[in-house]
Every structure is written in structure tokens, then in C-alpha cells.
Length: 388
Ligand SMILES: [Zn+2]
Image 1 (cartoon, protein in one colour):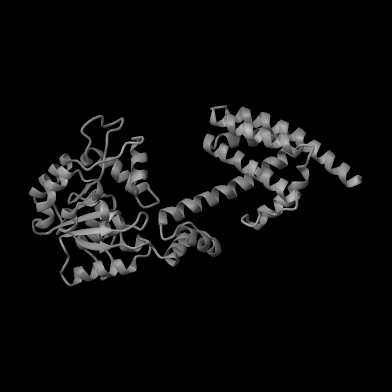
Image 2 (cartoon, rainbow, N blue to C red):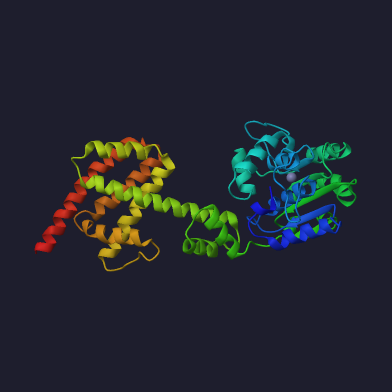
């Protein structure tokens, strides 16, 4: 993890670099700030920096042997501790060391910054909450008693010290206060009030604020390739939380892809003689997975709902893209009193059945034919209305 890959937080980066350049790096530091702000990434980037063989004034090189190992979270002198609990793999006495592989892959593959919820989901532990156990504290002390393998500073990271079992923190207090030379201990927390006062008082506080809207906007443009205006809107909604920004952006993409699919599907439903085209479309759509089919159908329901509103003179398409709004306005007349109730019910039922494990391909075929008939009815009614 290099500093340059962390979104914003320039002030914190500068402060950390200054302490290093002035040779006054505190050995125990508490990185504190809200979820989605990159605290853990900053701590790891700093550890990578101080151990880099080829660092510049502002960042690690990213390519020396030490950096390469840090980037895979696999440096022998980097020790990470985090909340764990039992799951299918570890049925009892869980502890960080038993989940290192999962931890590394979670860290490497997650596009967002790690969260407790995300981590527990990754481990598949259901609703159970993790703890950092006294077993973890023993492992910590065991590693501490060994010499550094290959680096200048050994780094111990405790992610979510709020979850330290009291016995575990008691065991570590002395170490927090006076770690051996060339040892860095970084605690990464979100909730100050949940930390034991004895832990708080032994660490130097590094406050990591929310990310600025401007930095989130930039990152959305660069990393998610969003157009400027969209990125700015999402940044405002995300309130300094990168994870939230990613989530909003993804839903945005889903909405866009649902729109394109739904428009295509309706076009095919309008043309009944194109059975092969419709069949191909349905079987391809069913392969995107149950959740996405459900999201597609919900989008359809939403479009029908909006069409009915447009027909009754209420235009509620302000939050849609221009293309989507235009499409809904043109489609709306086909949904009228002759068919609106049935179309609405059909889509609602389809969602109900997809949630209860109906086969997506069969369900979509059946639905297409029924929608075809209903659209025909709607068109006839529309022509009749125009003539009269
Ligand atoms: Zn390096």
C-alpha cells in the first residue's frame, strides 16, 4: 500500500511523513476516525514507507522486495490482529493467526476500505461478532520476543481495538507502553468511547478525518470512471465515506444497466414473432443470477409505476437520466387502464416467485408472453382513445 493509492488525507500523510523525517515516530499510535476513511490503509502505507529500501520524500517505492511483500500483506515483520469468531473452517478457539489467508485476500480484493461488517460477511460467520482474544495477545507477545526477520521496523497492527477482550488488552498494556526498540504498534479504531482508557492513554492519537468531498469526487472520476457531474453528486451523498461512495456508484451502475436491459426486453416483448430473439435474451438474462434478475424486475415495476404517474400528469422523473426519462415518457401511453393493473401484478408476482426460488429462465419466458399480450391490449386501447 503506497500513500499515493490512498484517497485524499494529504494532511495526515504529511504529518506521518514529518514524524519520520524528524525521527520522532511514536512507537504506539492510535489511528482514529470514521468508517470508510482509510485509517488502516494509512497505517499500512506508513509501515511500508518506513521499511522501504528506496523511498522518496513522500512515498515508498512500491517495487523493492520489502514493498512487494507489504503490498501482499505478507511481510514477515508485519503482524496483523483483528476480530475473529468461529465459522465453517475454524470451529473453535478462533484467533487472527488462523484467518491470515482470508484476511490477506479480503484486504487485497476489497475495493472499499475494510469494515467489520464486510469482514464478517467475508468469513461467513452470520450474525456473530468478532473478538480479539487473549490467544491473540499471546501470539502478539510471542512475535514480539523474536527478532525482526528482514526489516528496520517490525509492525504490529491491531485493527478494531474496540474488540479487544479485556484480558487481552491487560496482557498487552505493558507492551503498548514500552515496546522493544524498532517496533511500531498501530491501533486502528473507529469509536474512541469504546476503547479502554488504559489503552487510549498509552497510544499517541492520530486523528483521521472524513475524506473531503473534493477528494471523493476526484477518486470516483479516476477509479470508477464516472463523469464529473455524477461524481460530484455521489460525493455529496457519501459524506466523506469512500465505502458509501462506492456503494452509491455501484447502484447507479445497476440502475443504468437495468434500464438498458429493460428497454431491450420491452422491445422484444413488443415483437412476438421474434421468439428466438426473446428466448436468447431471457436465457442470457437468467444467467446474471437471481439477485440481479430480481433487481431487473424491480426496475421494471418502478418504470410501470412511473409510467402511471406520467399518464396522470405527475412527472416524477427528475432523478432519472435524460435518456431514461425520455424512454419512460414514450413508453407510458402503452400502459393505461386496459392493462396497468395486470402488468403491475404480473411483475410483482414475478418478484415474489424469484425470491422463492422459481427458475429465472422459465419465469422470464412466461412473463414475456404475458407482457406481450398486455402491451398489445394497451396499444389497442391507446389507438381507440386517440380515434375517439
Ligand atoms: Zn520500497
